Image (cartoon, rainbow, N blue to C red; front, side, top):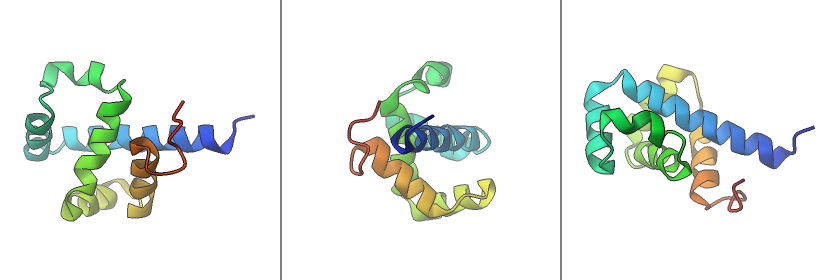
Length: 99
């Protein structure tokens, strides 16, 4: 049986990966994100396995409310889900001891 912390961590990771998938369909935003992170398109798959990169995806959304809202509307997520995932992955929430 999984603990709530494990489930929350998985949900946060799932949310971050959903952001990447959504950005893949938004070339202008993806280009902006890549230029901010220094990751090239070829390195996306490898970067997606990195906790810091996933946290950066959530930071990107949290830094621009219209982008956050567009993501939430496109993926049927509530902004609160992204906020929780961001807090967990950035260490600001109860998930500071991320697995």
